[in-house]
Amino acid sequence: MNINEIMKELAQYKRLQDETAAIIEGLTDKIKQYMTENQLETLTGDEHKATYKTVISSRIDTTALNKALPEVATAYTKTTEARRFTFA
Image (cartoon, rainbow, N blue to C red; front, side):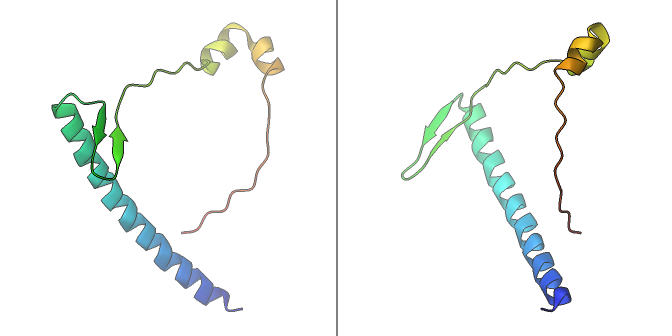
C-alpha cells in the first residue's frame, strides 16, 4: 500500500468534488432566480421537478436558556463523542 499515492488520488477527487459543487451551486442559483422572478414555488420540467419555498422551523435558543435557567440547560445537555477525519 503506497499511502502517498492514495493521498494523491484522494486530493484529485476532492478537487473534482469542489469543482462539481461549484457548478451545482451556480445552476441551482439560476433556477432559484428564475423561480423568484416568476413567483414560483414549484417548477416542473420534462424530467425533473424543483421546489423553492419558505420553511419555518423552531429551535431552542440555548444561549438564552443557559442565561435564564442554567441548571435546566445543564440537566438536558447531552455530550457526545465522535472522530472527525479531515484532509487538506
